[in-house]
Amino acid sequence: MLCSSHRIISHLGSGEFGSVSEAEWRNGRKQLTVAVKILTDSANTVKFLQEAAIMAQFRHPNILTLHGVVSTGHPKMIVMELMHNGNLKDFVTKTETRVNPGEMVPDYVPHQLLNFSKEVALGLHYLSCRGFVHRDLAARNILVSNMTCKISDFGMSRDLADEDIYVSHGGVIPIRWTAPEAISQKKYSTASDVWSYGCVLYEIWSLGHKPFESITVQQILQVVDLGHRPPPPPGCPKSIYQLMIDAWHPGVSSRPQPRDVLKGLLGNVEQVLAIPPEDVPADSQAAALGAPLDRASHLYQDLQNTYM
Image (cartoon, rainbow, N blue to C red; front, side, top):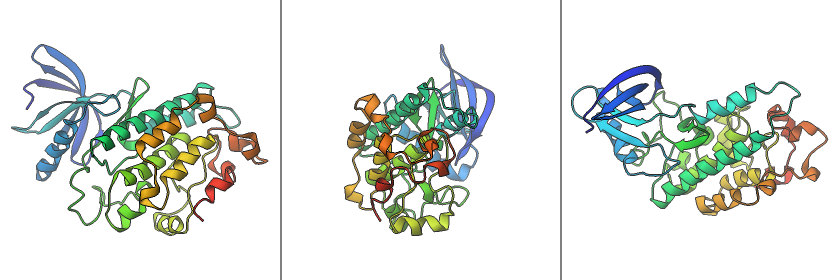
């Protein structure tokens, strides 16, 4: 329990178990601007506090920091560090909206996206080293502040093993981010987190688009089983798309470990960000970050056909 007083500043959003607000938090002589998750459904008290117990185990620059918990009285609260730029999906989507048709993104953007990719991989590597499976890795669950990414939202992380299916508060299965074996057999592992990481890479480099955005959820399972994978986003470096394809390997044991993903991201920056001219089809916009997704439908065709 954290003995303190707080003052709500503004509402930030709603999570699975409660609302999230920005607040001024005073604990003794210390005052912080924090994010406070407030339990709104008392029926979920155990799961709500379980999320805090999970977060309390972690100390890493790319994992959201827990400041404290109010576990007695009403309401129950989890106090976390405040990430000023919101979630990663919204952040990279804003990058796309700043790009006018026909314009190139600024030169710093690919380097920024590469850093985001590294930071999420570092957080995932830390979790895997601690034997922890996140089970809901997606850009919406990664927060950004001062150009640093931190994995968050551990609310579904430890109670899935005893559930028949993975169902969110709204009854929606996040199939676009979920490994096939986790959907069909309810088997979650570091390998299923790596599959989801591949989807996060897609979200980052497509500037906020979802994997398989053009088809329905019902169609996704079928096309994945047939070996299809999302085409690369326009302007996606070949080495990054190779990591996506490796992460989406149909064989669980054949997917890279997070440490292997990091090795692929920590090489020479110019080589990691390279788009080989011989791979660019006639439509030059295939190499333009932020171009319409269909412009890259034939980019890296050899990689697209890996599992077909």
